Image 1 (cartoon, rainbow, N blue to C red):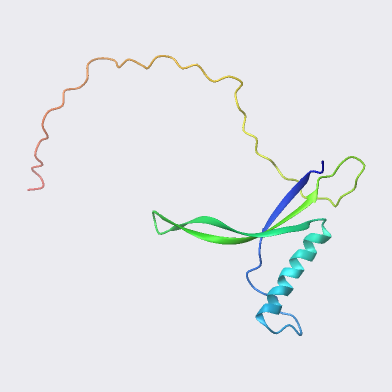
Image 2: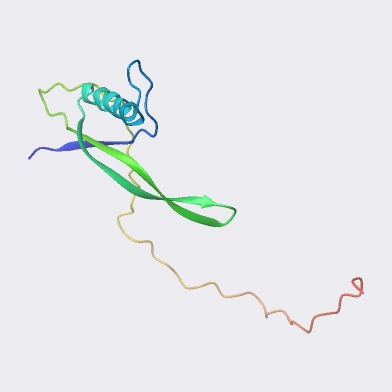
Length: 127
């Protein structure tokens, strides 16, 4: 069974200017072609394009959902005796999980009686 590693990059948002490339569509196609050829030279195969939702901040407390266009590439994982182009080192986060769940003891008993709470006192300074 072949195993793969994946690489996801944002799709270009603007086209590239070049001599003889005049229309917006042609400029965008040039930007996309350049990106795909660069990744192809590194051994990545194009798989698909996806529009994925992203939650962003809107104001102080709100959020809004936008969509980002992403390009998905893959390449076979390196096996023994096979040479693939070098890739930058990536660090994978693996949280440490304890072998057993910690034992919980009884809840702490409050020390002394609870304080006596009376009616609120009027604020004389505000009047």
